Length: 164
Image 1 (cartoon, rainbow, N blue to C red):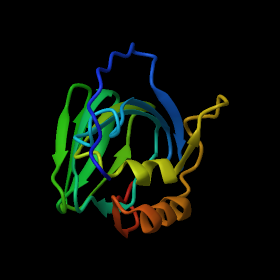
Image 2 (cartoon, helix red, strand yellow):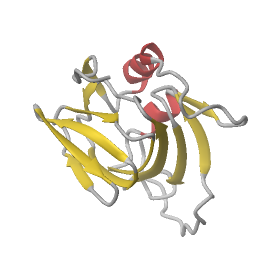
Image 3 (cartoon, rainbow, N blue to C red):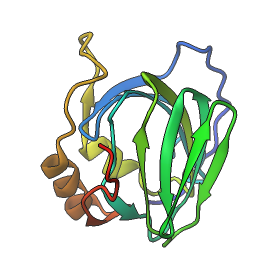
Image 4 (cartoon, rainbow, N blue to C red):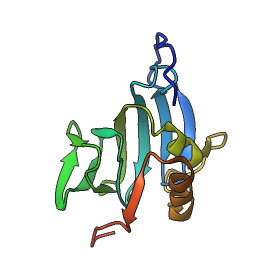
């Protein structure tokens, strides 16, 4: 992605582009790669209990997760840890990780640096024009297809959790 000009961004809590992510949940995009000159991508993900990701890595992106509400079980570099409200985790580029929502709902703020994985998320999403349930099932086939088409993520295998 070619770097573009950084623009000022001010958004209220409810503002930002809304996308239904096939990986499960509602994305609310707070700052896109095009707005940050490619420096980062910042989005909120609202999910329900049981939402899980496949074991994956971001070869070119550091991914920081800040849990705003709820709790997740994070599998990172072969170990599992619970991360609750106010907790933060960093999955450096190339480190295998996955997470599972263990609370009724969770809101997580994701910071991806640089913002080069935006094409993957856009390719695995659709505009949130209706009020779908945040508990809509994960469509791993569509997530994998977007990863293969757009890069930004490498799927290593199924979710590594025994409690799903």
